[in-house]
Length: 303
Image (tube, rainbow, N blue to C red):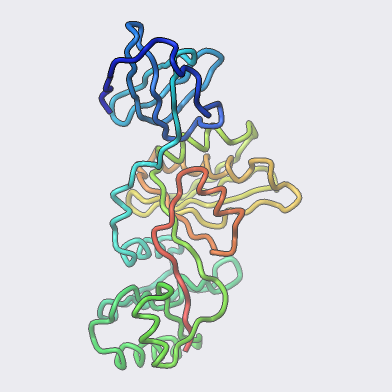
């Protein structure tokens, strides 16, 4: 972002801000004094905070260093909206099939039938439900009949993935489908470069092992933390991020996530995506600190 300037009296209000090392990795706006006494604003991601200066990576315009003694005001600002935020929910969720190479799909009008064998010892709802983010386009009764027939042939309960409170959920309720009572989850997205910058500043200096296989990588910190990343085009899907309860609040989740995003970035990933249950306040706070925002929310209906 180009700098703008305006007259300012040297020394007036200098240092009246709440910035500090805690803003490293965040997008901030800073007003500071130039040598001739004018004030200028600069907007970007804070990449470093030293004893005498801070460094901002201006959006698309390179880094700039600002002397702390010259800072007048400053504050964090929301992350730049990702173009992926405008992607329809169905398109986001279609990437989930990449998590399991054994997933099979079958179109059902505007819906998508999905089936996958047990993964990690259990059937995953995301891989064994009809994706229904909009009207089916073939008639509601026919769509529901086909869902039930499809999963009955697999000897599985018929599940449909919807957005809570949507017209789809309301219509399906009248056709005998109701929430399973657990598992509501936010689909969260973050631009990979932004999230990675933030994670690098927060992650502890611990050894992280990375095991790669084609478009999949698993990062581990001893036996204490693990997570898997899977590429789907230029999307990086994060799955199974977990930390031993006895080792939590030590930054290990950030270390694992940083390793996965670094791996994905090196292979062209632009958007990171993960699902987190709505009741998991700790995980939501962690992801929010590193730029993840909720794109939409998922719910599973059984009938």
